[in-house]
Image 1: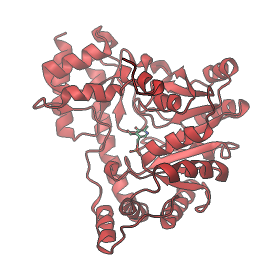
Image 2: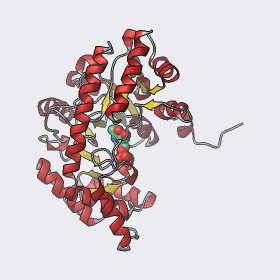
Image 3: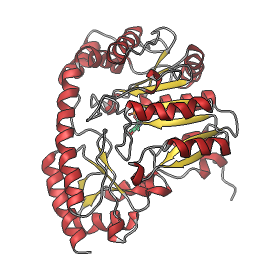
Image 4: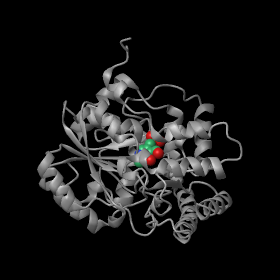
Length: 386
Ligand code: PLP
């Protein structure tokens, strides 16, 4: 029978993470190192700001672009932290997480058939969202040898061959934890400027960079005009359920994104926006505390994996490690499903993030150290017995 579902949606694959975690549901005693979500509760002062706003009766819609006060706080935060200047009135849009922001950016910019460079491996939603917006995702493979960073020479060659319009950057990266020092970004920027690419830069993990200062892409010379900078509150402030993110860019792009946003979403919940204001005004200490804990876990995970023979590069940021499981001779799916079945530890097969994720798994260290220790004991036992 002919399907009533659109061809585009029929062709879309369900998220590899979801498929795998449907298996986990209902299994008792599983330790999950699969979720990309902080194990912390949103800091109390932020929760309190949300509650207080409700007590005061703030229950209405806000401006489509978001509360002016929140846009102003974002503009102040970016200026103070990075010297990055965006006008709160015309260059900032509050969105339902970075998830909505990247969809709006793609739909605002893409004409049918336009090409978009996406790394492989990459966060699961980029390629499907490009296709849904009528574009064509083009993969650039990043390898363990290059510490999962985009090689500028490879990018230059790909741009000559494919003539893409956009590149999506994500650093620190989900799933690899890789990020870039300023010098490395400058080398990428030279290629990007040469080929006049528009950049959608997903920097949601920027505050969770561990060994060096994070540099937002639009701080690099010549890049600001054609970069859409995306950030949000989900990860660094442990606010995944509040659904607040933002996009910053030139007024014409933000105005185009606002057009779609006003018809589809109207505005982000006022309670969440008020809580997000508090996060920027008074949440930095909590971010630093959570960051310290992630650093402790990262050391444990990085050393533990390498010790048991699962070669792993040291993550620069975020809360993911992406070890190779090639030494076990198992495929990513087989490794993850046997580990789940035999040892009740859930990890994500690398192939959920693209074909080049074969031979890897993603481990999230957004779980407490006790759970990580127990899980690593089980993984080690599993690997030894193979
Ligand atoms: N971008 C990346 C790289 C992510 O890992 C995630 C969530 O895992 C998101 C965006 C979604 O963030 P949000 O909760 O702001 O929609």
